[in-house]
Length: 360
Image (cartoon, rainbow, N blue to C red; front, side):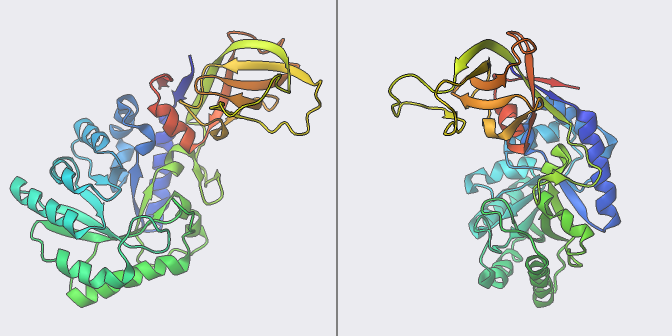
């Protein structure tokens, strides 16, 4: 069976390092846990460690995960990191302290449900700055805030934006300073104070040392760097964070010496993918190892064999083939091949019930 091993001590160490680094730069942050897919064993270890107290809040994009987070540690401030569906307003009020919003109708529904529950709900309004995902248009900012400031059960916590997720629009000093200027304009227009300018994520972290974070941008939402130790800005290790929290391994089901070129008419029925074999000679052969995971579990492009001599050959829904050259004496049926998974791979593997999880 394929296995994903998770070292929570490494993750906790990364959380401590990030908190120290960001605190030195007057930035608070939310730990985004969506990569874990609500795995209780991992969440318990992380959320019950003292390091979590150094974060502003814990964010996720699934309400069921935030419900679990509240069960594990009721003192944690929870953040719903995407615009809520309006029909989930009651559930949001029950389990979420802060939500990111772009719709007045949704915020009005949150206001009504908060009133029924005797609560006040905090919101961050997301602004469109070029990524073309969530965010209200800049020309509507003042009228939007004017309306939500009237809602009695809503606390307008701040202003935010999302960059680098869908189209990969890079966060820049100019983009970030625009957001801070909108914050200042809102405060001056309505004589209100906004606590958070939430404009940073893992992709934004390298800008801190480059001194490209404008004064006033004071909140980051970070997942990938905390769990994987890298920034997606350049996919390189960030600072002194560790990238060894996750190890994925799969058992070898078959080892045989086979040709490179398939034998027969090639149709359109394939549901998998293969390596590029354009330059391979017709009579070439090598040893292949079949392992027990497939496209249903993880995209093979998102995992890298730790053994550099093991090369991807092809994958289907539930099995993947690797070229192991002449290494049949070292890799046998029953052996384990180990991989370094990236962020998307871990998220997929955590979601697969066919992959065992070992947490320590």
